Amino acid sequence: MSPLSGPLPVRGFLLHITHYDPVWCARKATERPFDLKVALAVIDAMAEAGLNLLIVDAKDAVAYATHPELARPYTQPMQILHRLREHAFARGIETAVKLNFSQSALHQHNHWFRPYHDLFDNAEYWQRGFQVIDELVAAVRPKRFFHIGMDEDHARSYTQYAAAIQTLHGGLAARSLRTLIWNDSACAWPAADIHKEKSLYAEERIPRDVIQVVWDYAGADRAVLERIRGRGFEVWGAPGSDVPMVVAMRDALVACGGGGLVLTRWIPCVAENRERLVSRVREWATAAAEPCRG
Image (cartoon, rainbow, N blue to C red; front, side, top):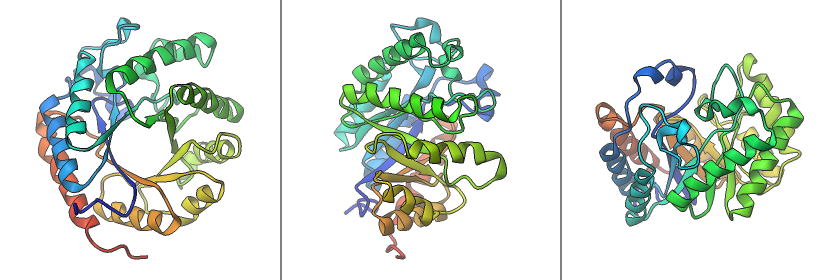
């Protein structure tokens, strides 16, 4: 048995072939294309560690036939996603895709979609958004999941936020895919209250088959996980990359009947980061081999 082969059904790794947040956006002018060889090495390390879900953070790192204007200097052909999917499949790993439809001038998570992020949830915005989704689905052929992001949303009202999730959920359900969403309700710093409260508001109004992925880098708040489970949602945890946090989140999820763990490192997938990415997967596996602490 591989070190991370249980007890959670889903044990995922989020691979950033690009990303959008203030730190990454500050480097966009010099961002280099992601390194396929490094990504394949990460997939091999995942397989050895018992991880079984690869989530590809795609955004504008690949070229879209429907929207060639989204191409940036680091954009590569869509075929690279097929290569990732085939390698993962050969190693027994399922593949999913991630975009981010959160609206925030500060966090810039939806700026990969520029200039269309400014359409702000009108009919054209969603039409173009699902055209992009369809190209990613055709390339990756995800079996079950599509991650829509939605963390740290500033611009939408509470009702607009819940409505956006419902729109994305409906479109993905029509494509036989389950929606994954970041849940911000474990965010504990004062400036994050707006995000925390939006997640709490949405929990009462969105379909219960939306999988809530709680990101919590300060420790696994079991009360948050149990509340979400009590509301009828499947709950996963995202503890970042620190090994003690990974172990704590795993234990909390097992205790409350959680369904999955999403691990990541928020660094580019390029040659100089190869060892940082691969070695951390191995460190997670070693730590997770320890018995759960209740």
